[in-house]
Amino acid sequence: MPLLSDLGAVAVVAAIGAVGTVIDLRTRRVPNWLTAGVAAAGVGLAAAHLSRLSVPAALGGLGIGLLLMLPGYVIGATGAGDVKLMAALGTLLGPGRTGMAFLYSAMAGGLLALLIAMQRSRVRTTLQNTATLVRTGGANVSEIESATANNRFAYVPAIAVGALVAALGH
Image (cartoon, rainbow, N blue to C red):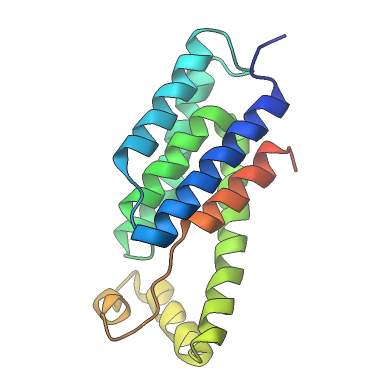
């Protein structure tokens, strides 16, 4: 039995999600030391046979996390740190669970965006801008990212929830 069992992976993913959330909420950044450290740890645990994943599975999780999050970065809907964190968490989750983590994160992120838009009295504008963003492939990114738009928010909490639910195997 691997030392980092499913329960251990859940605990590690939860701890990383909590640390990343606190940092993102305070600084609006996801530091490279966190993402690189998580990725190295995930691959290292797999290489040492201390997780349920093989090295190819850990690297596959990294690749899936990167590929799924990258389009959001390209169109300006998410930050590079968010992409790197999902990829890094993939080394602990493996390819299948990373795909599920992405889906759960998107659901949590949508709910979070709606709650923030309601708090900021921007529901209609946010929904219209989101529809335009998707329809045009990001043509309105500069409008959305404008400092006066007041519609950006920390996304790591959504990633943390999605990764944790996926780690739990749901």
